[in-house]
Length: 123
Image (tube, rainbow, N blue to C red; front, side, top):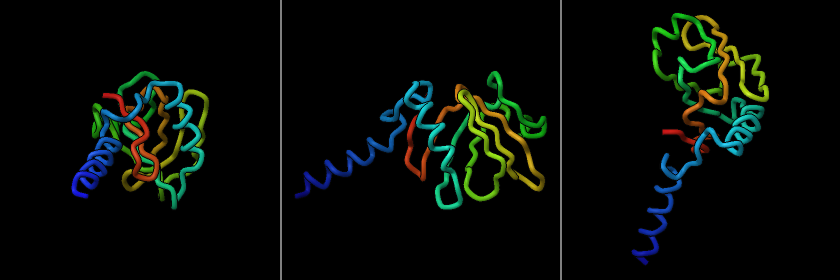
């Protein structure tokens, strides 16, 4: 009984580990990201971490100063005009007191969670 519980616990930890997640750069991961982003809503939070200085990322200079390397966003409540394209997504969100437009190519994404389940990770 104890061994079964231990194996179940180890399997759960391994499934949540970034090492167990598929790389975000794979074709399958990018397809999953695009499909999941289209369903982002208040009852279906989507979290992602992206490189802020990657080619094609568009964001305000203020955000670039605040997040010089990477930024994690949660698309759940305060976002509008989410547009998912073949190679990127665009969104307006409120990371502070005023709206900010972000453009994030899928190639800039380093980690992606769908409803708290890690879908891909790039170390």
